[in-house]
Length: 265
Image 1 (tube, one colour):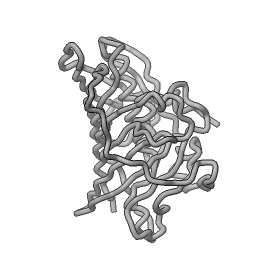
Image 2 (cartoon, rainbow, N blue to C red):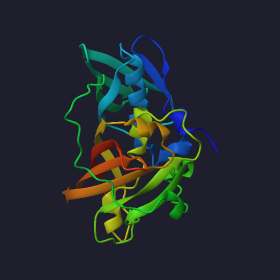
Image 3 (cartoon, rainbow, N blue to C red):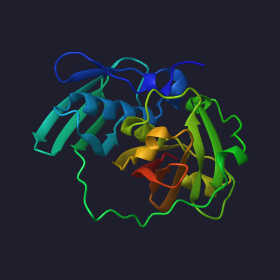
Image 4 (cartoon, helix red, strand yellow):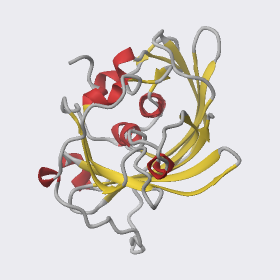
């Protein structure tokens, strides 16, 4: 079945402040690793490089500069400022020849308050057991083979759906070692672009920016299937804006991301 999502998001320390990542071609999407693995590896590097293990990843911002190849990649991590509760960090992911991604992160400890609330509501959808698993997709979307994907909301790719929204239940076929922010960072990017469901034909597309926030309620640590929803609100001049949201079975928000997507042609 190949390497697991946990193995693909793992990074190994090298020289101080430098970590190594490497992605298997079975997790590729087109010419490089799916963006979710890049985000997960960066998240893992930030987690390992911080100076206080009691802080969690609160936000992750990434600019994707080039496809991530199958060769070893270096992640150079720097702490910009570390305070009592919050730590600001930045990183570069590089191959031997070019920069793959530029990233920044905020790590923070829990801050219990009386202000907790959310206006976001998970869509009403059937349980994953009542949804059909997605059949095989084109070979250039290799990473799907590692996931159990069950669409249940909005449209499918190239279906000419009326609205630019799509979603469904998903989980890794091989159970992850742990449900944490790095895994959430990966899964947030493992659906097709929402604008793809509005068209009768396919077009190459790729994420160029990714800005994620993580909430990770305790229920998320026991998740098997998670619901991923994605919506596009605007597409102009070859660029689309998209919001991705990841939910537990019982409707708790795990994480959300805003992405800018390039419509290549």
